[in-house]
Image (cartoon, rainbow, N blue to C red; front, side, top):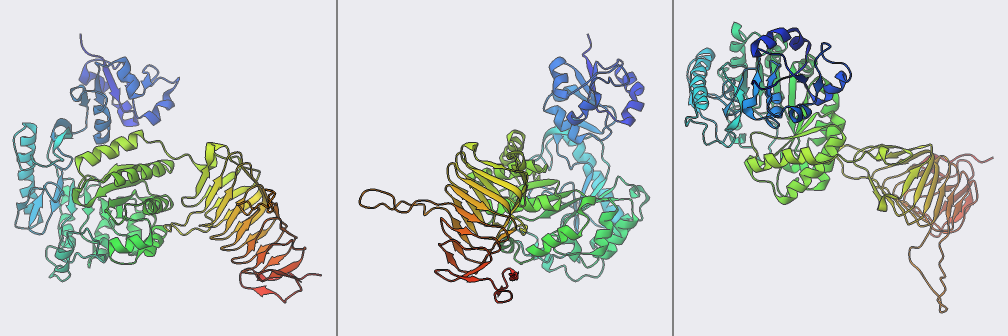
Amino acid sequence: MANPIIFYGITDVSISKIDKFISIVGTEPVLFSTKDEEVDNFKGKPLLGKYEVVPIKEAYKRYPDADVWVTYAIANNTARILSGIFKPEKIHFFEADLEYKRGCGYIGHFINYGRDYISPCCIVRYNPIIKTKGDVAERIAAWQKYSEKLMDDTRNNRENDCSKCPHYQYGFYRKTVKADTISFGSTHPSDTCNLKCIYCFAEDSLKFLKNDDGKDTTYEVLRQISLMPEYDNPNFNVHFANGEFCANKYCNDILDILIKSKWRSVIMTNMTIYNEKFAEFMNTGRLTYIQVSLDSGTRETYAKVKGVDLFDKVISNFRRYPIHKTFLDLKYIFLEGYNDNEVDIDGFCNIAKEAGCKQISLSSNLSKPFTPKMRELTIRLIKKAKRNNIYVTESNAYLCAEDKKFIRNAYANTEPETPLEAMYDAKIKANGDAIIRNLNKSGKIEGSGEVILNADAIPGLKSECVISLDKNSKITVNEELSIQPSAKIELSEGAKLEVISAKIGEGTTIRCKNSITIGKGVEIFDNCYIADSDFYVLKNKKDKQINPDAPVIIGDNVKIGYGAIILKGVTIGDNAIIAPGSVVCKSVPADSFVQGNPAKIKKNAAGKHHFGFFGKAKENK
């Protein structure tokens, strides 16, 4: 008795061809399956009125012996998904040019075009090198002949030039040889780069290629290909990974070809240069993928790794280029002693979120294994990336098999961070990687207002604000509480902080043991300290505490200057001004000006007290 048949993949094209597909297999499918996120579209709505649509794991559960036939014409990712559920011999393709064998994703369609050689892949340590001469057409013909022999070897399990490569493994790969991708992954005359990355192995070669006679340049190769009719189609791809694309002498000439052609392109760039024509090409939608090896999350680390201080320029260009028109992949190459720390990982994740990154690719320095610390940081990065719907994958070329497997498993089994806005009753907006510590998960942030964490934060700088909530503590915000980076708010067990609206400056610390109340329109500037307790106990000879805690109350429209200290038991009246550096240990009447250590109280007369930290003092009538 024949095995049940499952069809996988539902598109308008596949539905129009269903009779043809049924005639090929000789029977109707028992059900359809498709991508999990699409299955819900068919709940209670059988496909074509008769075929049930279920997730592929459910299909396997019902029919473990079924043969799965894929309807997609391009099915590389589908093949990988299905091979994790069904045995490879159970997976078939109506139109996709795939077969199960030992091989890799490059063989048969990928040309690595070097100055005096061609290769079927771009994995530097293992790629076969075939010396070639002649014009571009002659060299591509040499690639075709070599690839056909290599493809036959893979199909028949014969030893070949790729046999010792760790990427040469069993999987679903191309059946026929057809050049659809040309890659410039090595250096050509006119190629250059404006960075000096500590891991770069092409720097020495690039130094000798700044000057050229116009022959064998990336531009000249593309010019010749653009004149070949067989490559005048939207399925032809051009990859650039030979130095910094926008620093190439012929960059604009290359872009002219790309803009006029039908080709799709993939470009590796360091994003340090803004080029209007590059932005124009990006707007065509045919720059399908762009990868930036950022390798850091802070300006300091970037300068160490890249050899130049262009971090701010990169961040600026992420904002200027129409990134939404392409697929942005940010790469993180782990470098021991440089970027294997939480500060850079967190900063990198913040940049990825702001830039609209779709994918993060992890790698190491030329397949050097991850350290245990790097693996811990990988988990941290995955949690943050998943929270922002960013996919995390391994970089194929320079990562050992064990670390590839680790990244895949980690991504599959790691839960994303819970968004802060889902954890508290008040509305929370978190810029950067703000931290809320909540012991026993019993602390609350509530009220009808909004809390803005890391307000005005600069992307990539590690200076997160911190809110620490002890058991049963509570922050109530009625309108808005804006907290700048590196500020800290600490609540002890059972403490209550009530705010109508306030701005908290950088480096300011508010420590609440029992009760602090802040009114409306309050501005607390940088590096201030406010506390309702000494946070230690002094006792007399009768063992009685002589320094009891006392609440702090700050009225409406109060301005507290840089470095001021507000101690326990102080009430500050409406419209009062506390000058920078003041130490306030006694209550302050409304409309007063306070200055000094210890603070002296004066009437806040109009125009007499003007400080740059807040602007002109309010006139008192």
